[in-house]
Image (tube, rainbow, N blue to C red; front, top):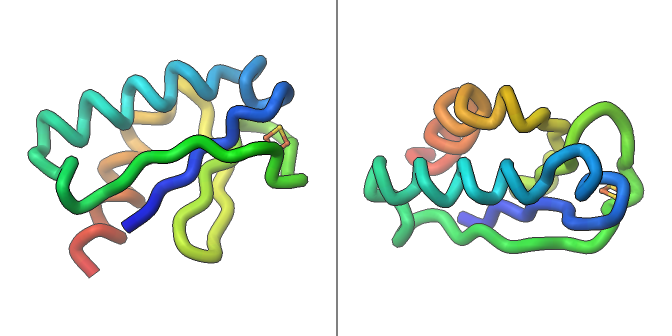
Length: 81
Ligand code: FES
């Protein structure tokens, strides 16, 4: 499964780097790095409240402080599908 994190300027200012780090750490902790591929993406044209994160066709907006919850609630669930 591919998780794309926007590193465009607007998302960068909202903390995309912190989100990449959090997801990377959790993938290792949960031993999911073989299942989930993290990659950066240019602007998705969806700059709004949080950092744009794309999983499949879905675009989510994630704040750095919510990255851990998002990982458990969305990424882990999507990965077992
Ligand atoms: S900069 Fe991330 S969606 Fe535009």
